[in-house]
Image 1 (cartoon, rainbow, N blue to C red):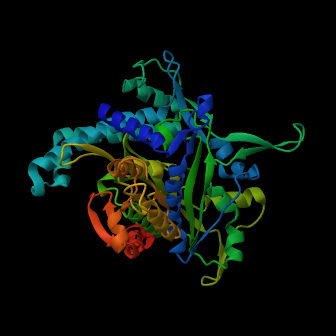
Image 2 (image 1 turned 90 degrees about the vertical axis):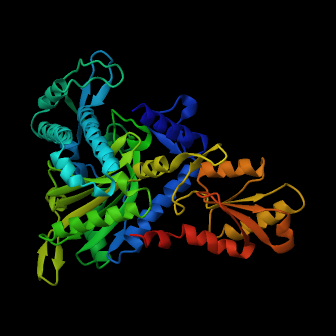
Image 3 (image 1 turned 180 degrees about the horizontal axis):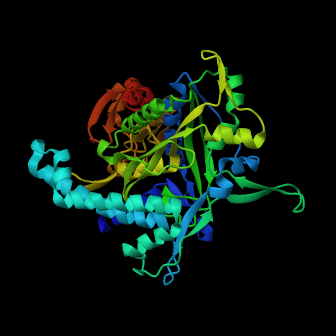
Length: 512
């Protein structure tokens, strides 16, 4: 555990030191669970968003985009169920005065048990090699069977308590002897529900102002615009509407850096289908979304599906794509079959029909919806934390390298004049002027070239291009590859093609 904590501290520290993420309002000692994306972070975040958008909207003929307003009519949130049911179960420790999400305390405890099982499985895999039969081992090894049985039992009891009686959740915490993570105290209050929506006002005076909410999710903006998009775009079911944008939740127990924030960004797509066909599309999108994640090369072993046993009131199937963050496997993306709950709820509260006329069936119906929803900030953290590595080189020295997928890297290439004289800076800047039309590139002339390489490694820059005196003679430069540190001598005229081959979204998305 200590090692995981150290890794996570390094991630947070590196993000600040190299201009990816800063604490918000830091000159005023910051604002809890709110962060600013710095000069490199904003580029990485933009590239992740564009990678999602291109795969989701541009590459699908039947999916279009939307950018709905953050502020929506307040009845929207009554219809969606957020006013009455958008709550977190909170529990306080009487001794430390710390507040926690009760379900997260139990889930973290259960995950420790699951990790024990996984360690036993990995030890057996290493011992037996290619002859290892994981399925047989998991079902016959007494210790693993006990761990996994306990893990599933805890999660099942938690889900039942969250639905039926929160006091059962407190009883489970006490039975498992779960302690305050910071102090070790087991002196807990009752579990209480807390609504997560931020309230605000619309109007010129306090007397006449309307109570509004900052949207807690982007999905409802899609649902209320369903008919507008369908008619104006002449869309035929099945079709999807995609959106990226900010959402806001008054997270009382915000933690783990940008994993859980009060202001965050979502990338969501709502796919409208015929009633009765939702499950085939649900499985389609589960498979498709996992392929998208795997295309980035962060390691198949870092992903797993968690299929929900207890479902939200609007769903008839739900699964999470979980990612192995430095603090364990946690939800990265959700895929949900939402039935026709949302559109029918908005029909009821608005008094307007939100139906589709299907010319093939010659009938009107309220479509069912399959949702894919990934947190952009969580995606950023998954990419950043997995890419940050410490390497020991052949000469015994070490380097810190951010092995970002090249397609997502904030800066694609840095151009470095070997010395700041003899016309080398002028040639380097000419290369910059040529490449910057197609790529985000940087110029760096400070320090010895070896130190500049290390700095660009830490920034995640895939290529370093060094201009030296031979460049004057034959118009060639040295191009260094971040991951292998291999150096090649190439013509200046070849640079664009070399970089394009490594950073092209087409080449990366073709891996899906």
